[in-house]
Image (cartoon, rainbow, N blue to C red; front, top):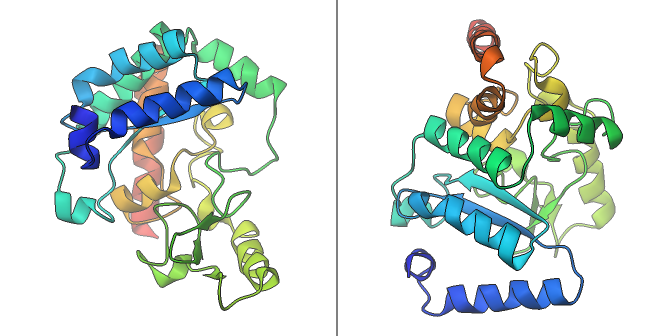
Length: 239
């Protein structure tokens, strides 16, 4: 009922679950993205357990609402970012069975290219909207800022789109400015660049949600990490 109410389409939950089950039965790896908000927050952990341990999805990403698109009209009540980070860490530990050490090992075993920002925008991902515009990701689209316009499916060649994309790829603007100093930088890579923009006004700012998430997985280093984040934000403000 909560899912259908948020989506605005009766029966969408049943259809979605049927499609997920069909993909898994066909041997297709399935990642589920859950957007946490005030209406569904208390159900997110139970849902994650059901999807991961009962249905068998490969991975689950839990994010928050951005004030873009229909959200500007619908105005769903958002959840506190620290509470969300704590929930994400709880699910990571108690449902996925992963702690900081195991995540570090996984990252070491499958290294990403040096300078990779983790989320992939401007580096190995291009978003194509239903109206034919290329952008950086589903949030950082031309509708939010002309800066994120890479081209148009109907008017531009993909060569031109790729050229614009490479200009982002060769820039440090899509990388968290704190990633090299942060004690979790090697595993975090910087987090969500869209969330950094909407929270701190810069695409290269730290993603505080991920900072809190890593701290929740490693409570002993929480204070040091908070200092890293605050120092980075302070330096950006001065510049």
